[in-house]
Image (cartoon, rainbow, N blue to C red; front, side):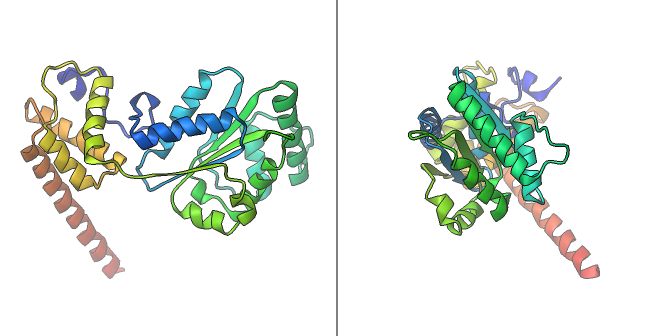
Length: 289
């Protein structure tokens, strides 16, 4: 039996997979989601979501897709890995993602550009649909790939962009964009996701347990334990969920009823010692090379 069944849960509450059902809407995440929806609906063109590793960018993107799916008139696709060795292969990937048929036997970059332009005019003007392209891990993109996106953003009518582009990336993306003022000037909405506060962390833990079906009268986590988790993880959402998962796993193994701060402190100490031993092994291996 899975550990969450033992605790009265219907499913895993602290998975690190970007499941929109477990998207905790802190004030900043809720604001970002609302603004992204507005930008897409108004066809403003270009939005950028920045944040360190583990601040919820990918899950926000999946939640945005879920919201778009519930609204008529939207065509949306997400690129999970935008790293390609050439401009042609990058445009080929976008065309494939948008399910655009290319008639040329050996298409060139120009062929892909023309096909994408025809597709956007057909969908956005003739069929009056909103085409949204979301790109995760955008900080991995090359300057050449970003330049191609700038070209796509040039396709517009007098009052709207034909493509709604949303980039999700780590802070390194800022440097890439700053080197391209002709693209940066096109950003209509930009947000920077920060780490959670202690209050938000307590709310997030309770929210995830509730979404997983927990109906017990007593919380599975004492507030003091969550505070220790928050401090150990510096408010990073992904780290918090990983440590909460480990805490519940230990709770079941010990046949306990609640995660208290003693359990959490032991777990944090164990992780620190494991990390130290791993670091020592890596240094030893490196020195022997």
